[in-house]
Length: 86
Image 1 (cartoon, rainbow, N blue to C red):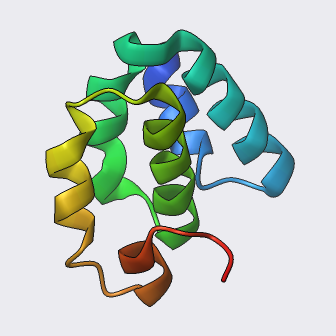
Image 2: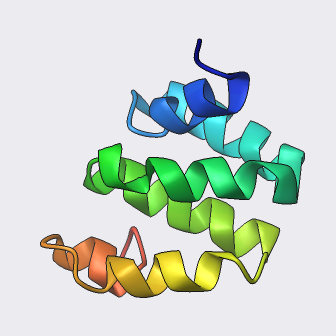
């Protein structure tokens, strides 16, 4: 069975409203959500990964560091940059 946090992570790749709501809830959950977000990164597309970066940034948990370093190898140049907008 998929946990609520896993469902939220999957929604990071959804439509803008769904993704925004999932992002906000993951930030509200905070550090407890971070391991699941990290584990779900590889299943997310570029948009979802960018949104996960925003969650990491807002939560500020040091466990995000290795995951962020791993995203530097992304095929998506925007994900490598870590900013959704120039």
